[in-house]
Length: 180
Image 1: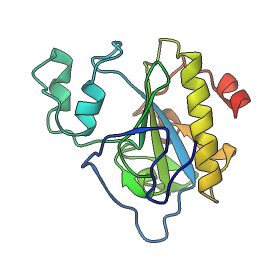
Image 2: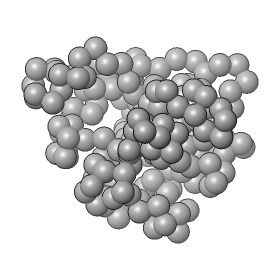
Image 3: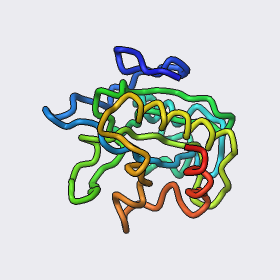
């Protein structure tokens, strides 16, 4: 796996999200944030995550989508249950994944992080291939960004405690860290 000069992963399918912008000057990437997502919740394999991140989701399709009306979000990467990686935002740009957040005293984690969504829920076990691809992607990012390290990988739950719970108790942090 490699990241090219445009900030794109060579092994990812790239689908551009409009939900991004430039990082603030001097905001070097120094954090990876792991999330989970499934749309509808607990269902896997639909294209609705891609639709959400590209502002094409028909929120009338499912009753649970009502809260998503008008939402403008993205992540840099999305890892499907089969390990396929989709990229929405070049890593040099700011994706809109963390919301109100703080890591080690620094607010606005979107400014200095890469967001990775893993297809799943807080309470359904993740697939081994997802862990392997996540670990490989994180190592690629660590190699690319000098200020990143294995010590600076956090869950959304860690940077927005009380507000977010993902990737949740079903995410095996010990297993993931063994793969790094």
